[in-house]
Image (cartoon, rainbow, N blue to C red; front, top):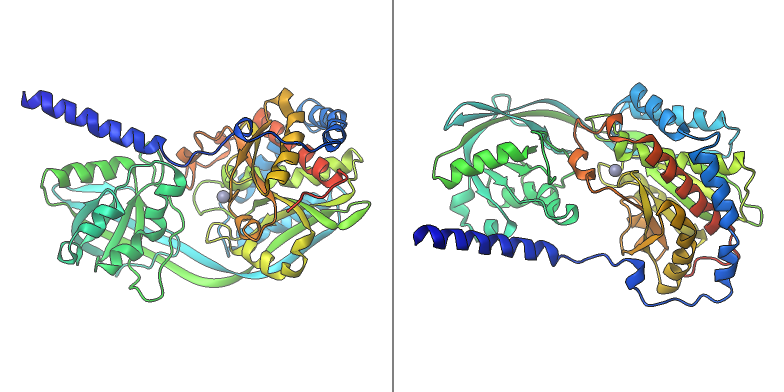
Length: 477
Ligand SMILES: [Zn+2]
């Protein structure tokens, strides 16, 4: 009887968890939005069908076939990880400028800004009790160091902020906190990484660990950004793997004392970096911009091939393909390679500030920073009228299965700082179901990229930017 109750209770708990996941705010697909009437514009947009076919042919089976992939491969093999403030990042920026100039695109500007330079040094976590074990670790961005001998204490485990908030201060004070929240969505679960250290320090914890923000693991820790607060003690903070988080939690749940020693060293300073702007000038309204973008910096692990090498290279390719095909639109197509995205959208924020008096000239802004797997369409922020026009354009991509419009208020990462002020924009909606398996890990390498899918993304990105830059109307705000 007891066993049966226990089984039923477990099923009930699981049901609760699943229904919770499924009741998260869901993005609507375009077919669910009320129908649009954009009048004669639909006919005009339909007339771009042959241009779309030309671009897709040129990239998927013509002279540009595999070009994006081959260039991305050379780039990430040569430079590897490109952390904010590093010399290797600056060298990689110079390389991209040269690569662009070699294509006879010379309208290139770089804009300097101050960026954080956080350098990971020794990191080691050892479980001392109930048995000795090395715990795989990646410190989180900007984490402070421990003393040389490390921090040694018991672990207290919480599966949510709610559970943490309910715990008395005495329970947390002097302890190492492990936030062991099960992955639901990135947006929701990442808050344990970005805010964990501050929350734990407010209750007197000596260090804070987070279960890596991923639904899947082969014992790979995932790094990422976290933010200290001015008035709260800065404590060392790191991510551990799903496997080790589960192990620690099992001991803890059985009432066994888990003692860890955490040793982390790092340095932090400010350096100068650059955003890179490449313009393919428009014929009629060169001051009006359609921006395609990705970030050139990466975390200090892996090769930054997926995050965000793919987004960087599809944005690099767009003006080049248009130039090669002699497709010069009415408005300017600007490619931007953002710097210092990973440490907190630093490059994009600097651009927004520097260009705030011209933001009315941004007709549409696009970013690819969530993978360049098979393209499915765009996630679009803007008015209903703007979305109707974009949806009509996306119909031209039915043959490559990329005509879905997803409604969102904050597309992309960098461009959120510009879109929040009412500038219409979009991020690449793609088949990125496994994106977070590799995100911010040593596993973010060329092995994750696929040449055919990258070609489709390149063609899609280029053609969408061209049409928006060339149609007779501005995207309404
Ligand atoms: Zn990224």
